[in-house]
Length: 514
Image 1: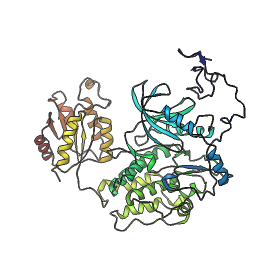
Image 2 (image 1 turned 180 degrees about the vertical axis):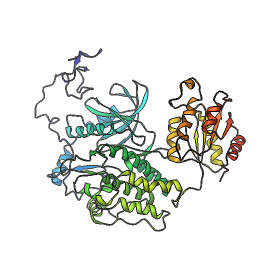
Image 3 (image 1 turned 90 degrees about the vertical axis):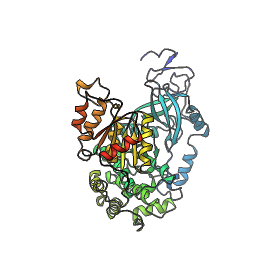
Image 4 (image 1 turned 180 degrees about the horizontal axis):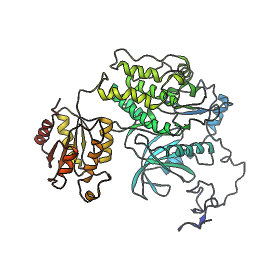
């Protein structure tokens, strides 16, 4: 066994990590009493507490909608037993203890300095924190009970990480590692500066057909990456979709995800308002189960309501199993094609729904590409890729006053993502933008090289090949002129920017204001 770390008197009896005499849990493996100083017995209430809060299948009196959230049920427990189990769950003191550990400014897990509370869910809390070992902001998802109290919840927690970290896609929040702090397990994840879709909807954010389909398309791309690995999310809903200010969408929370060929017997898992019929029956799931949830979510983005009129959990289950969804209001500006896509996704039988994300994308992509949605924006979209916040703010202000829709970023890689997602009609590119692209060796010492990397990718895509690009520079780039020209720069604007120069450049490339 390894010797304890410097500054710690003892070693954990399980993993050998350094611990102090006052430590109740090992910060590395989560062992209770890591130094072996306490004498635990099987009568210790902390060791005999319930493993999870569960309810029986006949749970008709439980609350519904978002207040109910994600739930997991098994056969064999009556409602009374379930309520008794819930009463034996972790105490208020335990909750307060964990919340005190997550106060802004405190260090959690010996390396994460808490920034702010982001939210809570069925399994625990989510906070943003600075990983002081690398000086990067991350998100932490912390299980609400110590490892020994709810081992089955911990197994789900581990399963979430094992599945989620296999997925590498820009529309899926990346998961990093598992850790422990005072017995509380946590997962470190990519931090996304965004609110979940539910918060946007609660604020009355309006999603027309084009915007809603754009978000769904990104969710489907993320799901395609998961499904290709045999992973079914099982809990697609607005709370689990992050949407940033530029309407880039990211799937999060794989807490009840499973593989398509494995599922616990008769397990019912998910959020009732968005669960497919087979999930509610405790049957095996498939990618089509996620598409059903996507159909409910798309309906809500467009109509502002769920596709079923139901107030109790029993009514919700009955609606998903047997009731035909309410059609979208006839006066809603939504195309027939999108209405058909929703109807397809909300079929009761799995075999009648889309079987792959690609099948749905082949329906949605043409609608967005050709502007056949009834709500297709009349505003021209301009993408700004600019590292200087002042220059970006100035250019955004000029363009928005002239009637353009603007999306912007200060990073080359993020600019590429926005170009693919937003399909802009014009791009303003900072020649010295940074983004870490691989570039030819002879250019690796030149400040403008990342701008070339951006252009290489954009010009390699058939859809973006013809989009005019206006290059913004602080000086002439004689050594790179031929490279930029070869990649198709439409015009060059010298900094500092002036309004008249911006307008003249747009006239030159044929994108006059609306």
